[in-house]
Image 1 (tube, rainbow, N blue to C red):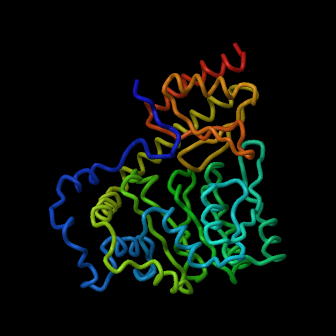
Image 2: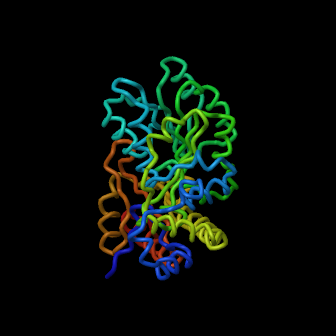
Image 3: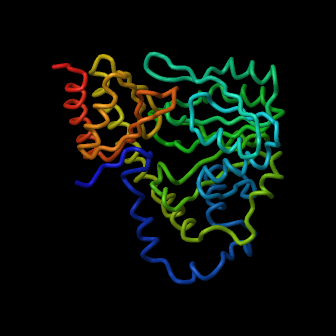
Amino acid sequence: MTPILLDRNENRYGPAPECLAALREATPDILFNYTRDFQRGVYSALSEKLAALHGVPEKRVLLGYGCEDLLKQAVHHWVKPGERCLIPSASWWYYRSIADEVSGVTVEYPIVEAATGYAYDIEALKRIQKATPARILLISSPNNPTGNRFPSSRLPEILEAFRDCVVVYDEAYFGFSEEPSDDAAAMTDRHPNLLVLRTFSKLYGLAGARIGYGIAGKELGSFLKFSSRNLGYSRISERLALAALSNPSYYARVRASVIADRRSVLAALRAFPGVRAYDSDANFVLARFPSSAVFDIRAELDRRGLVLKFFSEDAFRDCARITLGTPEETSTLVAAFHEVLASALAYP
C-alpha cells in the first residue's frame, strides 16, 4: 500500500504541465553556464517577471530557496543578540528557532482560538510594541498551522504602529482563500519597512525546486545587498517558476478544487461532537480531537496509509494538521474519517 502523505502541506496536484515541459526541454547550457541576465540590467528573468507581476521596481525583488531561506536571512541580518523578535503565539516553530540562532529574544503576540477558527489579537500586538519596541515583527498570513489570515484591512495600521521596526509578512500559503486577497507587495511603496515573502512551494507545487521570493520596501536596501548572489540562482528553478507563472488558469483550477475539498473535510470532521475543525485559508485544516481518542485515531489512519501531522506541542496537543490532497485523496480521507471517528468516539 502506497501511503497518502498529508502531513507536510505539499501541493498534491503537482505543478502546471508547462513546468514538466520546461524540464524536458532544458538544454545543457542552463547547467554549465551561469546566468547572463545581468547583461540586460536585471538580476534575473524571474525577478523581472515578478516585478512586473507586482508592479514594483525589479531591484526590490529578491530570490531565495523558499520562504525558509529568506526568513532566516532576514532574522540573521536584522536581529542582534538581545534584540526582540515578535512572533505569533500559535505558529511555525521555525520562527523561534531562527531567532535563537542569533541570540534574539522572541516575544509571542497572541493568536486566539475562537469557536470555529483562530484570529490575530491585533490590539494586543499594538500594546506589546508600545510597551517594549521590537526590532522585527513576523506575521504569517495564512498562519501555519491554524490556517487563519491576517486581516488585510488592519495591515496598514499595524505597519504604521511598527514603522520604526522591520515587518516581515510571510505569505507562503497565499492563494487558497475563498476571498480575493490584496497584494501586500503593493504596500511596500507606502511602507518602506515592509518585506513581503512568497514561495513557489505551495500553490505552485514546486516544493522540490526550492524557490521563493521577497518584495522589499525602499528602506530595506541593506538587506537587498545582504541577500544578493553574485552568480545568481538555480537556472533550472527559475525556469520552473517562470513556467508556473505562464499558466494562471491551471492554478485557478487547483485553488477552486482545494477550496471545495476543504469544505468537505471541515463538514466531515464537524459532524462528530467533540471534534473541533477550524476555518482555514490555506491548503490544510487544523482539527482537535478528544484526548482519549487521539491515539486510536492516529493508529487507525496510519494503518490505512493516511499520514497526517499530529502535534506534540502543548498548544496543539490532540491536534492534527491535515493537508488537502487531490479530490481522490480527499474522498478516501473523508470516508476514513466517517469510519475511524465513529469507532474511536463510539458514535453510531
